[in-house]
Image 1 (cartoon, helix red, strand yellow):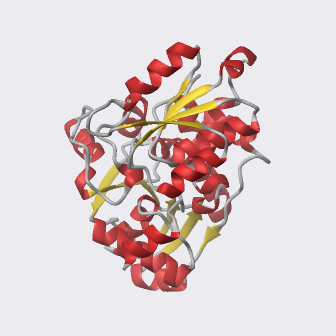
Image 2: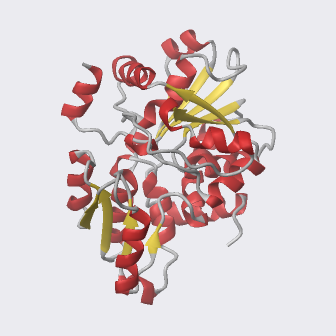
Length: 318
């Protein structure tokens, strides 16, 4: 498929009536603190609690009957796992998910709750891609990548498309960045309407592989980052996502784990939104004034998920 604005539009038609059209939240306090008009796309209220459902369903819905019969295999720290598991259940398919042994218990329970089989691996000792592909080869099943695939990127971009339809023109859009699927999809969606809209990705300071890669003009691999943002613990951008981000001149800023905690607390106390650490990254960047020219501008944030169990949420903020 050609990965462009029309691919995002096609994904939107495929997801219509399947994915939730999540609300766009406003906060007078947030506007006052930042000096901007802020529009928060609440993908924490998406089916299975994160934007990942969009890409997963878009991928699985394109599979042939023969491929569906074989089921699918995916690897994920949590949200992609749940997205694939739910999409597979909805489409009557078997799903096997390769997950790290330290996956937060809430995400593990939810993945199993959607009917998926789970195979564990050790982050420090095994390559999750290799584990998944070995299982897939044995079964003749396709692997559903968490971000580095045209269908995944196009599906993710539908969140930004809805944000722009509901909020109108925006001076910048800010998203969290792990492997870059959401940022790449956002760039395609936004630049299909206005090629001048700046796209900012936010990484944890400890996991700045995308920032380093864009600075050097080539994909850089780093050590496994230690951060509370488990959904952003990537070591290198994807091939597809890096190409899109570079072409669309996406920009990267970083935030600390403490700033992620502060953003989670702000969202909970002032906006009544529960965000997992990864999803709080765009809000953290705006609250700490990392986004250039935000004052007096119309800024869109995509908060990507809310899959954090009550005990961990309390521990992170306590």
